[in-house]
Amino acid sequence: MTEDEIQSVLQQATLAYNKGDLAKAGSLANRVYAMEPDNHKALHILAMVANTAGRYPLAITLMEQAIASFPSNPHYHFHLGSLLQGQEKIAQAKKAYQESLRLKPDFYEGYLNLGSIYFAEDDVQEARRCFEMATICNPQHVTAHFNLGILDQERGNHDGALRYLDRALEFGPTSANVHMARAFSLLMLERFREGWLEYEWRWQLENLAPRICPKPRWQGENLEGKSIYIYTEQGFGDAIMMSRYLHVLRSQGAQVHFECKKELYRLFSLSRLSDKLHVRLPDDGEPPPFDYDYHLPIMSLPGFLTQSLADIPSQIPYLSGDAERITYWRDRLQVFPGFKVGINWSGNPTATANRNRACTLRDLYPLTDIPGMQFFSLQKDTPAEELRFVDREKKIVDLAGELEDFSETAAVLVNLDLLISTDTAVVHLAGALGVPTWTLLHTGAEWRWLAHRNDSPWYPGMRLFRQSTPRDWRSLVARVAQELRERT
View 1 (cartoon, rainbow, N blue to C red):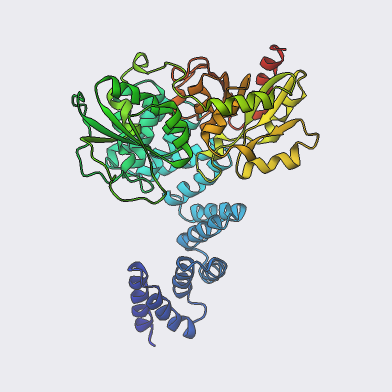
View 2: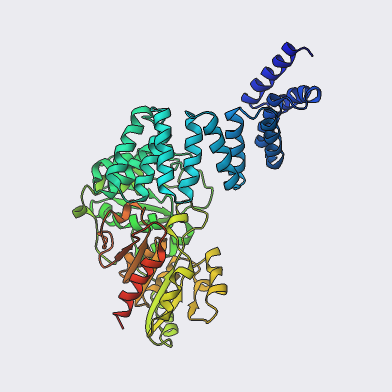
């Protein structure tokens, strides 16, 4: 092939790759590679094809070969950084991004990716520098302003976050991620009217979809003599927290159909929150098989019913456990002397938010040195395995194996003197039951805990302990331990 023919084949390969035709792109690039094994353009295309096909080690090798052939191309270094970052080879990825920026100082994508690494490493100063450089290189890039807003949120600076997020919306007015981040900060600052409106953007996120409902969505109409279907969404804690609003709907004359996941069914049934209770099975995408006048997802209720802190239904308890199981656990636990403390340190380990808001059992373990205390683990799933390695002295009684649903957990909680937990569904359950609860929060705590408070208007009697420094659980637990000692 002549040089012109080679360039034509490479152009066709690039077009095929951009259209998602990996087979054609790979075949065309291979034709050039067979003739010129050091052709950097062919190597680059083959690397991108291999990456898209999930052949990551091969993709890295091919990209390194492209760089060896043409080391002054900043995009090759950038793509190598992306490949390495995807394989969690972080130190190498940082070097690749830094080289791309040395070759192209206005490479805003390089600043964004490098900043994301520093952010994950909790190097706030370098992350901020990178994101600010990205805004200088491309002032209208939504992600750069968004990332700066998230940085401020993680440090509890919500006024600062809103300034960056408002700037992001100037250039990306339909970005659901930005709107949801604004909702987070607005709600934290108790600007409820604006915050709930922004929170409706959640349905534009890729991982959320509303229930299929052929009847009208409730918009605040008079409910006297009407039926309304409320369904849970997102996590268990969200469902427990917002189920308080069902009695408000019933007090307005509505017949309430309530749908929840099976793990919550017995708890909500015993608590008699609704007129009809239904279980939603996993992957159930069909419309509800019963009649109703209106529908609404449960996290949209406060947008109609809470415009200020004074509007929060805070009558506690609004949930209750099974009387027989409560008696069982009372008899079971009374043989343990001392002040009975339940502990929980992690929510769903697969949830992105859990990375910052969860601690480890080792973080909490100094509490077990306090005399006069008996600790009980309510932790379930993978994080519960930490008990085997950390609690070698058997200071903690593990109850998780018997907690088959939230109703059973409720029966245990009401027999404890205190729950100490990070931000998990269990703190919502304990709060709704009126069980004394100390909730441990990281610096970027969720909107529901509001800003700069050590109490919760959602759960009167709950105490909030907040990190002073990101990821510093040791100092926070030391404060909790001091408070706990003063109880003995």
